Image (cartoon, rainbow, N blue to C red; front, side):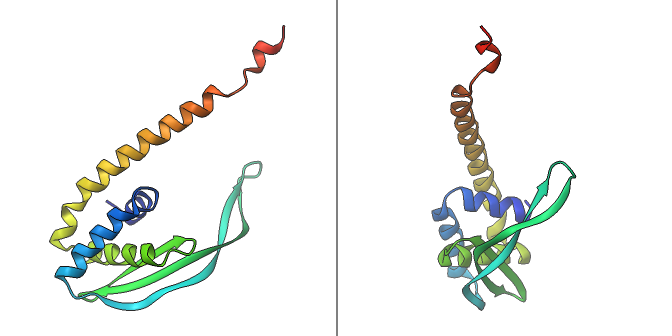
Length: 140
């Protein structure tokens, strides 16, 4: 599972799962903190649909953390002021970079959570479509 997909699942899903996964790594392996969680700003890109060009819509507050496990660096970036989550994501990322045996069993948990998120998203979209106005029926 790639970094982007894994991070998206952990952020949108359960922060408690990220905490649990990071705790497993911290208990068994030496984790060195390179960069304590700190706040910063990053530019947000958007695509303008008419010309299909990219532009920067503005800045967003992020929390960033970096850790090292066995010489590999893990990065955790999250929107908002979420120090713990950024730290947990960095530990998980480093564990995947090192290919720790513990990280192999996480994929199954993450895929289950991803399926649940997709089902929840489909339900939410169905609720939104129920309220959508049908303009072609208003021509009476």
